[in-house]
Length: 231
Image 1 (cartoon, one colour):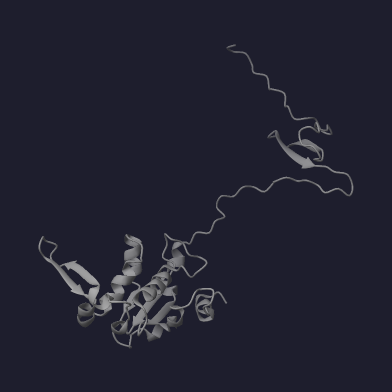
Image 2 (cartoon, helix red, strand yellow; image 1 turned 90 degrees about the vertical axis):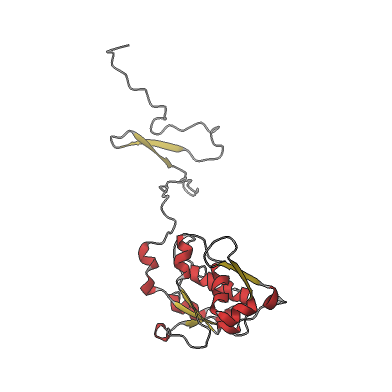
């Protein structure tokens, strides 16, 4: 009715000291309800006899922000760890898999697919990388110089090894990185050299060549863990 005052609906919670019906929860201890402050909210507390275990329920406040997510400062390039891989006699696919994993940071407990949490990877002796089967002559590389019809060029892996041997490792690793801006940024952290020398000695890279042919559970990761601060 218009203009009439609304009466407060009586609370259906039992009064203090009133025991609820045991049919609600058989075998559960009695619950007491008390009003807390002026808000009128009820806080249920468990009461049990001496020697009995109290059932307190789930009182922990739900926090949806407890999951870890790295911040921008965790992707600082000045704090990244450098790694080096010797490609001499190593299988191309296994080498590219290890390099891409360390570029993305999948070896770290803080790995996040959408963030750059990995390090820098230096690959030396790229001209001596090995391939299995008949890939040396059967594997083809395709590219367009001016991106016009009829300008597609093809060459085998052996021909590319003679022309630009670093391109073999670069294309293999880039195919294993995510596509888009993140993948383009991660690709700049890969340094490939045809010879055995590289200009990154000042960064004291960690040698991870021995991890190519080993499973993570069988690999010795002591040097890697010490470099990233896990030990």
